[in-house]
Picture 1 (cartoon, rainbow, N blue to C red):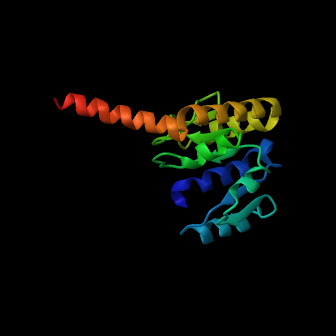
Picture 2 (tube, rainbow, N blue to C red):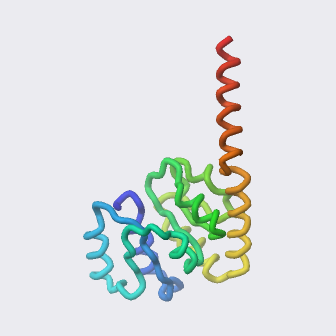
Length: 170
């Protein structure tokens, strides 16, 4: 869980006045679960951070969320971002690995410089304070996912790559 950036978002919840009423749902399980729970307990965040563990019905959980944050230090693709956008949730993520390719900065959410807690807080605060923007980015996210990650679009892209590689071999 260390690479998923949980400490960063907990730091935001602890130290930024504007985040004092925010709640965080943590979905998933991993090796760092116990240290994360200890951090939550030690810093009196138990009433605002909800450890949900492994969830099968993520859609039902995300229905109750305003936005999805992924402050990962390393992320190859960021499938959770595409899933969140498909459910009309704006996303805030560190610009690492493949995350810049998954979302459209300032349209479907915000890309943040890795480890920049001030910027992470600032972008989350924008969404927390502007529900209309939150909904608009969510709708744009769903459209973005349909246009860029639908199975037929992905198949066309893969076929195009194979055709391009095949024609360069001749």
